[in-house]
Image 1 (cartoon, rainbow, N blue to C red):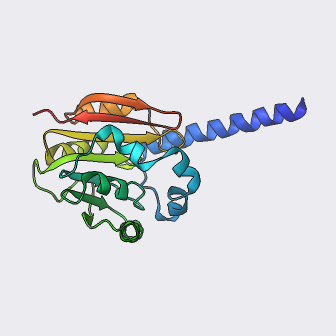
Image 2: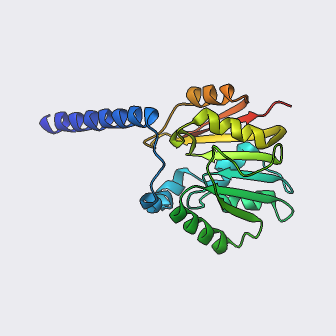
Image 3: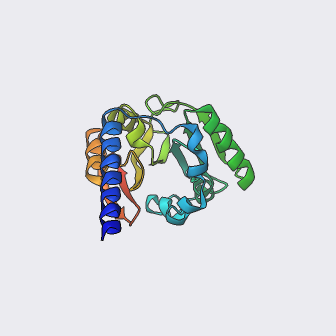
Length: 210
């Protein structure tokens, strides 16, 4: 009985600590440091974060120009590159140089020749107005200091009726529920189209009104 009691107290303490961290990061967002790259690339994460399955709700088509915001170590980059095909193009931006090195290495390993990597801030995208067919942010948005501003910038570069996918992981320290993500996107001018929920993650697809 004592063991069960201690286990209960330990679990309660962990949940409380997680709540405190999430509240702190909600009001003081921090970009995931490059030192956590092994965690992002771990086999354990890939068990619940299949890249192709995560991107599936966005329905990328061959020949499209897609934008990946926060490419990180490239976990989802190669899958997106395959989906837009040789006639399409994937533009991947990342803010941190150490992450960019890992991202480029991943792209070289999977042989994707249709990907362009650029160091850039999500709040100041280096692309023309209405030049992108679809965009995606995976476990990125809550870490951006100005979430609505970054989404407005994404809206600027998307074509009329362009699609946006935002996906978050339940166990991530900066996790926010779908209703908050939808609220941020609505304020930026997006219209929610569909929400996909899993045990460990969710994805919301939005449309940029014409």
